[in-house]
Amino acid sequence: MDLHVVGPLASPAERAAVDTVLGPATSGWHGGGRDSRTEGHAARGGHEARSHRDLLLPALHALQDRVGQITQPGLNYVSRRLSVPPAEAYGVATFYALLATRPRPPRVAHVCEDLACRLAGSGQIARDLERALGPAGQAARDGELSWVSSPCLGRCDLSPAALITIAGATPRRFAMGEADAAAIVGSLESGEPPPAAVEEAVAIPQAGSDGLRLLRRVGKVDPASLADYLDCDGYRALRNAIAMGAEATIREVSDARLVGRGGAAFPTARKWTAVAGQPAQPHYVVCNAEESEPGTFKDRVLLDGDPFAVVEGMTIEGFATGAVRGYLYIRGEYPLAEVRAAAAIEAARAGGYLGQDILGSGWSFDIEVRRGGGAYICGEETALFESIEGRRGEPRNKPPFPVEVGLFGKPTAINNVETLANVLLVLGDGDGVGGGRRYATVGTEASTGPKLFCLSGNVRRPGVYEVAFGTTLGELIDLGGGVPDGRAIRAVLLGGAAGAFVGPNALDVELTFEGTRAIGATLGSGVVMVFDETVDLVAMLRRIAAFFRDESCGQCVPCRVGTVRQEELLARLADGARGRPAAEELALLGEMARAMRDASICGLGQTASSAIESAIRQELVTL
Image (cartoon, rainbow, N blue to C red; front, top):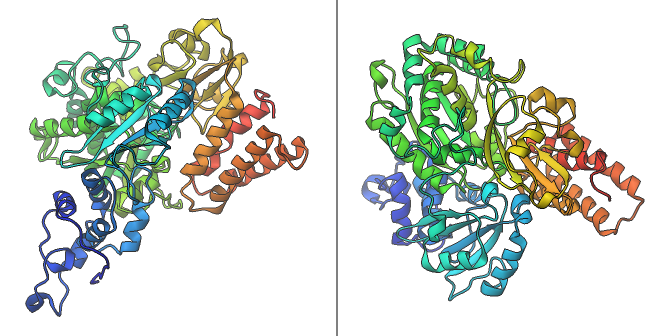
């Protein structure tokens, strides 16, 4: 197809930015100069160009990194290079919150407005920025600076948080924790993070504690050094896996009874077995690091502080499933994680742990990093596949399931960061034989191994904590220093915005899959967010409703409409502007929740009302 686009041509800077991703244009049929003598009557290269559609999102990122937005000429150039219709490319560009298709200053501060940051005073930061730079989204300082509100940035342990993006020939992105308006403005003006925000080492509250396994290297070894990683038992698990073979590797993971740590808790070995047995080729593995659940930041800590562990875990998964390639999909709000993961992959490849004939096994496998665009829905596995393939991140119908028809229509095993880190514990003990049974002795019968929890909110020492399954909620909160100033706990959010609220009477519940299920809650993504007696919990519920309204991909009616109506109904109840008795409004809220739960395509719509319903059901709020 010969695409004809209208409007001005892309600037040299835009073309150069796109060409760094796609390579130079080789013919007029995909962005180069047209030679009418050889190309006037026959198309060449269109099918080949379309086969690289998965580079659409990286190309859009390159455009924005260079000029600060996705301009129409730049988008047209990308469309021609990839033989993607401009309307489809525009649909992708407008899907992601971090991509701008309207004029915007080259320097932008994304200021978190989600739950933990609100508790830490992000509202005051927004007011201060409005006085200093004007309203959100408005250009300031001769059109060079701006700020916008953002959903959770995955830095709830360091709230309030901000993400600075600076476009140009040498683009920069960096995150700031414990930020204030003055520091944000200073970083926008200088293009540099404040000295206190320079992220060299990753700190965890349990640093130096005995018994850490998943976090034992975080903050203790140089995350950029393969030698340091090898000195701390790095790549022992991969060597053991190759020595015992793929079937035995999966058997050890099965004996460990390891289940996914991303929220679904699906048995890891069952997924790997299903992919390994598929006749269709090639097989792929994907690491889901799009942890955009408000209150979740454990994957960020692992990627920032121990990236080689994630790379090794993906490599073992690839070996066990017979995969040829892996994709590490990192949320766009994690610039340091992206840099460190890419460096770890390069070092592993240079050391013979990736690429051709890994460790002399005759097996070849490689990994590619992909940056997300700011879409919570891309944490859903099939939406993530669509995103990698260069489409809008909208979930697919199931079946078929990813183990049969996944990325690029091929069998795919997808696991999250924490799950893959646990694989190293299963296979990295001794020669790996019997490691699964030893792993299963930690925790409980139905919830084995250690677990990472993201503790935030009204606690003295927020952060990622590693404990064995079976630790109680109260014990975890005490590990974080308890609530400041002796204030009482009003509620705890378990599992994130898609989880459930529990009251102070649940502090004795064991943090296991079966323990939380028994009280109508969930472990979800490992969120434990504490709210003390001073918190306006109704405002928190309204923020959760607004989050799901914004993050719904809009593909299915129950979610697209239900999340909007849910937010409107909560606003009526909170503002006292209801047109019917409160009991009728609450009954209507329950009906909408059931409709979303029963008829939404994916987990976003199915769980969009869970936290809100749980708070109302337990009378933690008065509406």
